Length: 107
View (cartoon, helix red, strand yellow):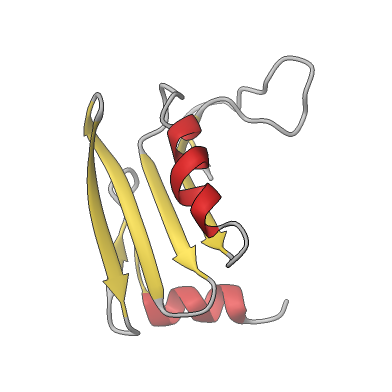
């Protein structure tokens, strides 16, 4: 998750941020549909939310949604080791090979 400025938390909670700009999630088989549909719809109600990145757990595949204006989103997908994910909301890019190496390597 990326937040611009100071973290804003839901009143009475310490685990719910209300001002995310970018959210990235790793998809599992059991949550894939929920993350892509209901959860994304809920995130879109957050005024600061601008970009959603979904990382497939099983294959080198990333889906990216980014807001261009109110209620308009661009969809892009990336496949394979050489593909380069370029974030729209912050200046950052990474190959899928490096992205998957980063989150697949045990700490």
